[in-house]
Image (cartoon, rainbow, N blue to C red; front, side, top):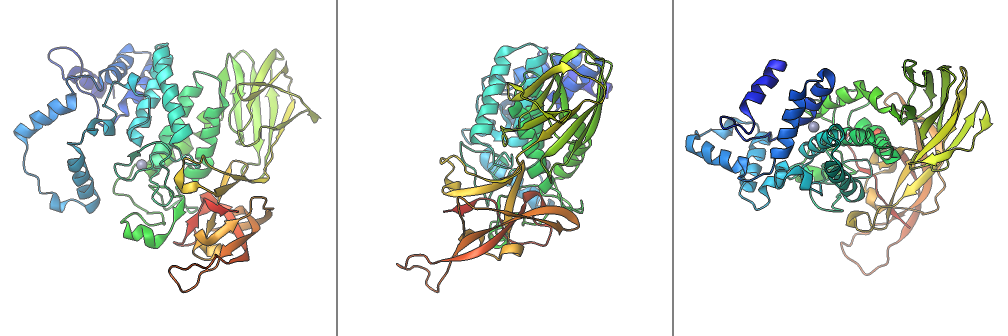
Length: 496
Ligand SMILES: [Zn+2]
């Protein structure tokens, strides 16, 4: 591996015999930071810094490279390429001369002056991840400031309710603020994995519960939904509304997970994420333990200042309860920070079965005491179903609501509710009935309620006022949709 990197170091750089280039698809930048942190060898950090600082400078490397390539270009017969590849090449050709051509690869300006998320979403987020790493390692407050502006632009204006990002299927990219179409959502699985990386890197710099809120939302909703319950099918794009007939005519992937993708990035990326899930559960802040996620696990940090060894037993995602037991402690006075989730600001904490009134620090409950072996922290969360609305600038979601139970997003599916799901209107003050059920052998909790359905008549257009009929509807967790055949699905429901 070192030989490969040494070769890249010899080719790219600012010396006269080197190319002043950088990658078209960012990822090596964050890998180089990992190599530096593992080995302590500055050459990896230097190359990562070079790639980020050189990007977007003038004369533009990609323009110069294109000029040189045109001189030696061979005629390639694209007809033998798979149709997806042909479409992509055609798309690139059509866009290569556009005014904004460099924003697709985030080379329209130097990264530290990019304040909105532009272009191909996976490239963008891998780059932002490495920028956050470099901000931390170089103690670069200007770079950190840029990262925070990018983060705000994404989570305030360009992110779906299931943490999907990169809404446009043209160029699998970010488009513009509040452009979050549901039935044409791209929201590539890899882009949300990269968003998790970016959130994680920012959380290593400062204590802020929002980073782990987004990681939690990503994992339970988009990431889990991206893979079928039997583990054999994968979504590349993650819709929030599915009408199979519509998707077919838009030449989009259907509302069914494929067993194989020509561009097979997402399935192994999900595998890697799940295998490294432990990274996101705990962290430290000023040598104190931080609990970010409520996932059953054990943590041994008996070698550090707090001398703690703990065990967490969580009932997520079916129930809002998690218990943390202290298995070992050096009995010193110290703090444990526990994330107060965005969806339950009234999280209840019991210590050794007694209610504990905690202080709040940057979205975390801070519990300071002399921790002893066999101490027990019990966390209770409000898992009652709640309707959530979106900012009215998202034109697709006006007068619509979606349903959450704790961190779990719900949806309607045609197999439970009949088709034409857009005719359904949910009441703002709906009461939901919980039921234990199974979907493809997986235990789930469904939520049923009374709603209305707009009746249709034979006229395409009519002056008649709509007629509503009462109906019963059933929601299932979004992560279980499309496990009972291809059918309609809807996240954002009309609201009365
Ligand atoms: Zn992917």
